[in-house]
Image 1: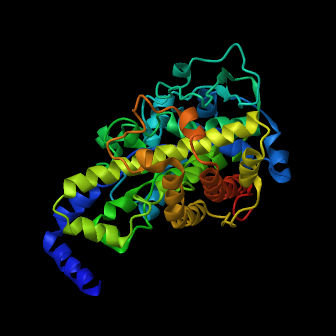
Image 2: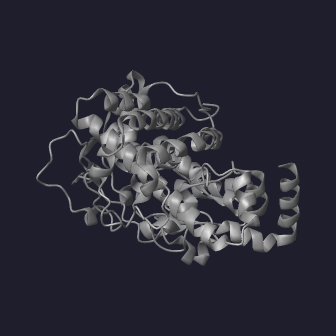
Image 3: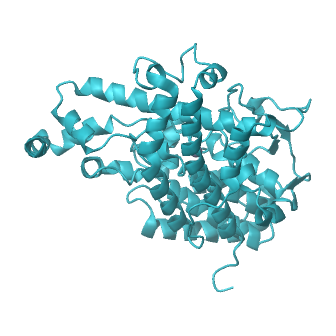
Length: 445
Ligand SMILES: [Zn+2]
C-alpha cells in the first residue's frame, strides 16, 4: 500500500501539473440546481414560534423602479461598499468594479452594476404551496422565467402578486428563495465587462453556467486542492454578501418588500451550500480514487463515467428531497411529517453575525456529510440509476419521478430520509440564521 502511494506520487509529479489539472478538472459534474424545492425548504424552516412571528407580517409589494427612484444615491454607495469588500474578500481575479448611476438607476443599470444576467425578469409573483387549492389564475411558467420548466409531479404554481398587493414575509421568502435559479446567474461568462473570467467548472452557457455561483468546493482531498485550485473559485459567498448587504440597505431605508426579497436571494445560496453535492465535487471519492485515476490508462473513460454518475446521483437526491417534502404537504404520513420537522428542529448551531462565516460553517457541515449521503443515494436507487454511466437521469425518457421513488425499498428509503434529515437540519438552521442576520440591528446600533 505504502509503496503504491509513493509510486503514485512520483507519477503525479511526472504527469505535469497543467496536464493533470486539466484532466482532473474535466471530472467535475456541472448540474447547478441544489434543491428543487427552495420554497418548501424555506416554508418549513419558518415553522418555529420565533420565525412565525416574523413570517406572518404583511408587507406591500413595491416595484423595483419605485425602490430605485427613491434610493438611487444610497444604493450607489452600497454597491461601491460591496466592491470594496470584494477587493478584500472576493475570489482573486474574478471581478471588475462596476457602479450605479447615483441619480435614478434603471433596472438595466442595476443588473449591470450587480453583474447579473441583463435579461433577468424580476417578476411579481407568489408561489403556491402544494397544500393550497390550485388557483384558476395560475401563471404560465414562462411568465415567471423563461428558464423554469415543468417537472411533474413537483408542483410549480405561481399567481401574480403585483406592486400594491400585500404578501406576508413568509410568502416573499418562500417564493423568492428560489429566484436565483430563474436565470440571474446564467451565461455570465460571455460578459467580459463583468470580469468573472472563464468558468472554473460547469459550462459556459445554459443551466450549468450558473454552477460557479451556487457551488463551492473547498473541502476536497489535498490532491484535488493542489492540482485543481479552481474548484475553490466558486462565488456563492460573494452572492450572499451582496444580497445581504442590499437587503439590510432596503430595510434601513424603509423598503421592507425589497429587504425581504433581496434577503430571500441571499437565503438561496446559503441553502444551496447545505446540499452536499454543492460542496463536494465527487462525494465518495477519496485520495485513493484520484490516485487510481492518475495511474489509469483510461482517463477519458474514467472522467466520463465519474461525471455522469455524480450528475445522476445529484439529480436523484434533488428529486427525492423535493418529492418527499412535497408529500409532507399533501399526505398525512409519518415519514414525510418527520422529514418536514427536520427543517424546523434545531440544528448544528451556526454563526449568526457574519454571512461569510455562517456560509462557511454550512459548507463544512454538508461537505462532511457528502460521503454518507452519497452512499445512501446509491443504496436507495440501485445500480441502474447510480452506477451505470450510460444512463442519464436528466434526459432518459423512461425516468419518471413517481415510479422511481415508489421503487425504493422501504429500508433504503428510511435510511435516505435519515440522511436527508441531516441536510435539512443544516438548511433549516441556515435559513433561520440568515433571517437573524437580516433583522439584526446594524453594528453599533
Ligand atoms: Zn441554486
